[in-house]
Length: 205
Image 1 (cartoon, rainbow, N blue to C red):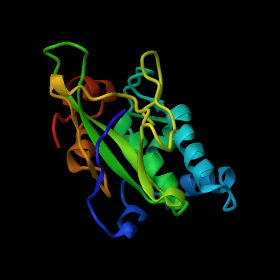
Image 2 (cartoon, rainbow, N blue to C red):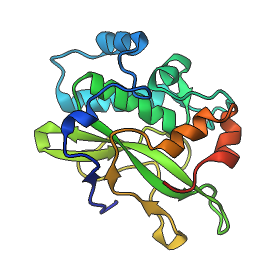
Image 3 (tube, helix red, strand yellow):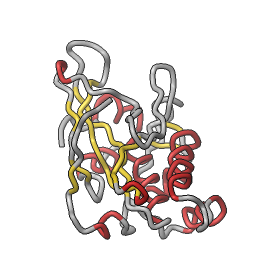
């Protein structure tokens, strides 16, 4: 369990609610999804968990399905039902924000492969504000597979990856209002998701 103390990039909560180019919840497909799957009367915590499980389980991680297709924005990830963690985190933020639930972006610096000389890469996940308990929690919708079992929890974090500080990995504490520039550039400047994953992920933020 991470003992990281999360910090907000902005104190203005509205920054974590707005639609933007990458978190484009004004897109018709995202609007239709939210209207058909989520109801205003839903319990907020149940709604957050439902949105998280949708992105985790219904939107495939490109590497896991060995797809070269690159998705960038939230609406693209939804339309193609796939993306790497950068695009999937855009979609989860978009769904939550469209429901009036503040959501932001968090990052980890991880070893790309489980070897001593592995290059580092930046991994994206989300933070969401739980009004009922007045607390921000991190959720990782990367997608589960053998060796990865991320889950929804209000207390103990169950993320896709545990940071190993002895290997130089880093848990960044800041909750960003928008995805950091280097992660979006990695998607926008490349045409093959598998090549991005292997060779073109940023190593720091």
